Length: 370
Image 1 (cartoon, one colour):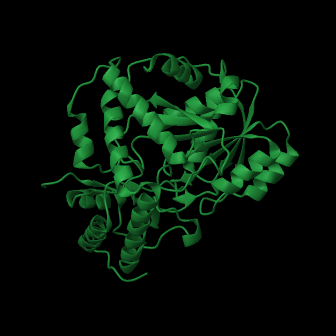
Image 2 (cartoon, helix red, strand yellow):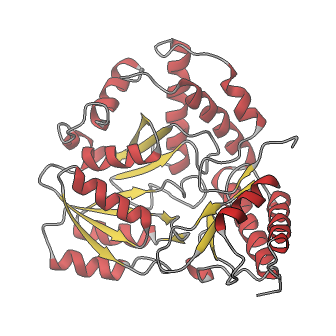
């Protein structure tokens, strides 16, 4: 095969050659040149959410989940009470990590095939005044659901509660404007819709709550208040930064800006999603979600109802054709997932559909429009 396999996952993603080439050089972690790259990345991230007047951004080494855990530990005081709105696997992960950090946590559940409800949140906050913070997963990629960020944020603001948003799979694709939506923290990562490589998360923290975060975290390495304070004083990371990841992200942001920013990225991903769903339907594969709940990030499909179907064989055969799919994350029905994000467009999505059709026929599974 004369090209890298296309990663049809929610991250890591397929990246451009320009992004890959940015990682060919070594950088000194305390060098002024690298400090300049870090400062530029932070400034441009704030540009994306229009957050210069209201928020700071704090980068952190590690996967996106590292930054979710760091945000909860930094933003929520030891005696705080977190309410997690749960409609999928990543919501459950947020609840688990909150509990493991010793914070009180309550979980309100919703169906995996539907968005969370701002109305239910309002009822929960009216019933329990001890809740201090709400955690929302903006795009729950367990099924691919887009949750109503603006509606949830409005309810939290009305009740004076802190909102922590996991925007891992939505940031830079779905609209997020800090001038219109109030959040105390919003978390994303390098290897998602900015189309960088994995290894760095970042957290936007509202300036009004920043000083109150000092001393909350029980972790040395994941204390975002300390990370921010040190960066402001020195321009440096407290501990060894993921230098190659940072410079790759800087290059990826340049391409994001050249493409036209968030609206253009959303348009491409939405086109990818339509191409994928329409093509899979022609093969007889049905999406799990109704259109009104589907984010153009990753699509969950019902597995073929056929005795010959086996996901491991299905995955391996698609991989040999150059496309890497993703297993299902649901417990109720058998599914698989296909990502719409990364440095790909309509042509790659149609090629992926064609490959899936070949695999199904190879497995002896007839294809017909759903």
